[in-house]
Length: 65
Image (cartoon, rainbow, N blue to C red; front, side, top):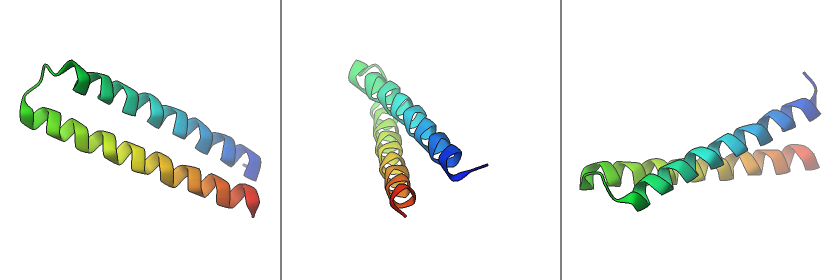
């Protein structure tokens, strides 16, 4: 697989992470779960966002390098 294809796959992964984070955020906003579950979901959302940022950094580095 070439570099360009690798970057496309990473961008696709970012899209999937964004969709997952959005779904988690919607569930948090509904506020129908227990405090513990909402806390866990908040942690999951934060981790997804950190992962997205890390992938974006990898893409910037690879695209520029």
